[in-house]
Image (tube, rainbow, N blue to C red; front, side):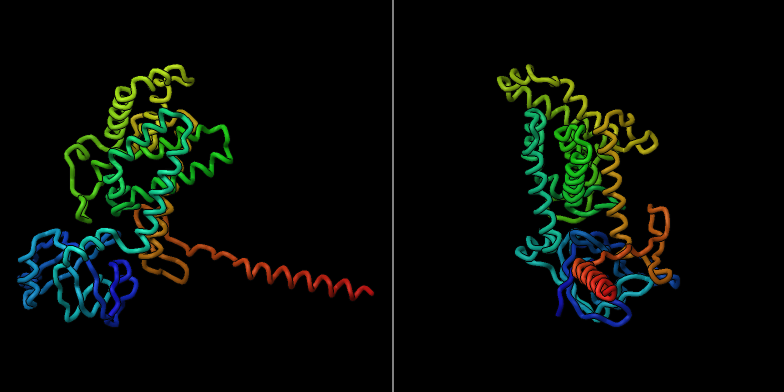
Length: 365
């Protein structure tokens, strides 16, 4: 019997039942009623990267047993799964609680996502360690040391893009790789500042979109709700900077001799956080006023939009061959991307062209 993640379950089920198991965390259990007044439960189940809802009718034994376990419990479901226009459903299904070893494996996430996030964490550590400016290098190291565990389980958003445990890690790593690539095209850019800006631009989301150590449900935080991630990110960097200076008195004294000055580096970094949404109407308290601020804003937007499109291609209904339905907040229906020509086909085509040219040359004699 196959064991699926939620995304795999969605991809591998249709109108014909598929027998499989899936590990989940119980996020919600809400009592509802049908039009005829009969009660039923709607439970929301989640894992590292996806979620789905399941209805439990009053005549099923699970109607009683599911209400006896606590929310955020980890459970394995087994059954004959189907999927239609109303979503995922199951016939002859049952569930059990996961044991502690199973829970730990579940929290790591599916192997593919875990592999990607391990690679991304290593890239972030490598790129921040490569920063030449000693102040920005030290600041990034402090952040990763003090907040690294929380950073690794934070989402980049509550919905729309990278809205999953570890999504922030993926988003930041991809942005850093983009920044490095663009610095090769625009060598005038201060790459040290840009890498640090990418690391810290959404750091306030540690209070907006972080996940608990044992869970896949984003809680709500008073600071995140009342202040938002841009002011929180500015505050975090300010506090880290002050602590860095106070903890490294002798080193900081040497830094005073550097050009640009400590104050210049600090304000430029804070400006990247403050302006990264690009416009006032999208929440930035100021507009991008430096090349690094412009680049940061655009690579942030590019990576978010690209991720939205990747997810939409997986889930959007097909309207016609190669055309999929518009998914909010994308602006239009999706068209299937143009496929790559494989190197083998290109090489074979070039060989044919050379052979035909040779034959034409022979015909001249």
